[in-house]
Amino acid sequence: MGELGWMSTYIVDALMIGRLPHSALSISASSLGNTIFYAIVFCAIRLMTGIDTLVAQSYGAGDRPDCERTLGQSLWFVVFGTPAVMLLTLGALRLLPHLGTPPDICAETSRYLHALVWSTGPLLIYMALRFYLQGISRVLLVTVSLVTSAAVNWAGDWALLYGHLGSRPLGIAGSGWATCIVRVYMMALLVVGIWLTRRNNPARFTRQMLLPSLERLRLLVRIGWPAALYSLTDLGVSSYLSILCARLGTRLLAAHQVVLDLDAVVYMVPMGISWAAIVRVGQAAGRNNLAQVRRAAHASIILALGYISIASCLFAGFPHTWAGLYTNDPSVVAAAAPIFLICGILQIGDAAGVIYASALTGLGDTRSPLIINTLWYWALGMPLSYWLTFHNGMAVEGLWIGRAIAAIGSGANLAFLWHTRMRAASASPQRSRLTLLTSLHAREVHS
Image 1 (tube, rainbow, N blue to C red):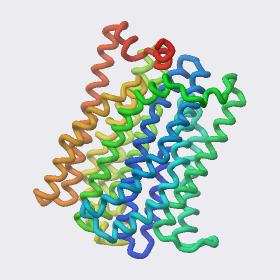
Image 2: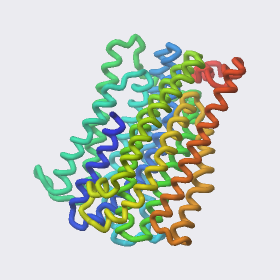
Image 3: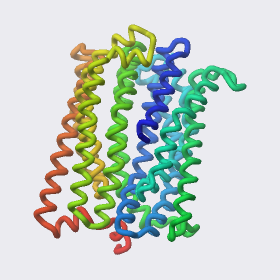
Image 4: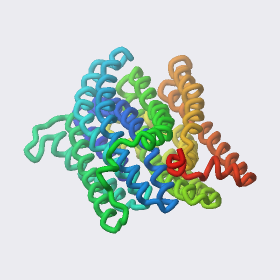
């Protein structure tokens, strides 16, 4: 529910932007801006993945004070991550003209991103608090913040895009400022959530926990940096494909964005289940219980693949209907329809990939998903997409075929790795203790 609520803010933005004059240009600019910003900011968020793993394992081991210490150290990621994300995002704008992006798209994208970047700080604080709360199995306010964010975003878009409630019409920049308002609202709800957990929590959060602990920060970075690069390679795929698609013209870029956004909506359910996989696998690892680790991963993959099998059939079966929700431009709808069919296939690979990558993350292994994802997408999928698009005459369909092959291959490879590791752990109890279930915070104390 929470992840669908998260994605609904992007859907609201797209629907509101799609009703602006020259909607194809506006959709293209928001598409390009979002792919640039979120590729960078989610890299910073994934650098914080160690918070989720460490808190879940500490909570599973019954060490609540250790959860609090991890939360305190997480705020240092916010302090250094916020200016880095903002500078990298605005710096990326200077590259667009050199990549063949048309001037009108560059100008609108710049207006959008100069507003959107100010949401970085509240978003990073929100994610740090969220990782902590879900690691200790307190997810109600996380869900509420995400589900209600769409309504807040709609009100902000209505006021700022079109000039209501005393605001002048800001056009596409208004959507960026509305997102800033949403992120502050979401952050505030989780601050309340932290306060509520402290009321019945014997472990108190102290100022001492805010002082930098090099051992703990080093441990968090050790878990987080492969996850950050994984996110960069994963979300970088969308950025790369959108930049290539911009060379095909405004109509095909708009069609590409329609499918990309709706694919992301479908993907949010496996993504939500994947957070549960990290937490439940991590908590079981903290208890040093291999059977619970396996059950948590098994339940997650059944839920994710069961859902995605149904959703992908509906997704691919009614392409004109879904595209028509986004835009009233018939040429964009017609261009989007063939892409939906390809996307319906790749969603199965995406779902399997995110679940198995998250199960490995719950154990503290973020390097294997990075290596597998990089090889399948950047050594094979993206070069194939480029070749099919510009040398085989397949246009935007070629972009998506390359991505589909990478998604299916990566998901299958991660599934094979997980099951191989589980068989090895079952056969050797001593090995399972050393490689799977040793509490990461216990390693820190030992070191």
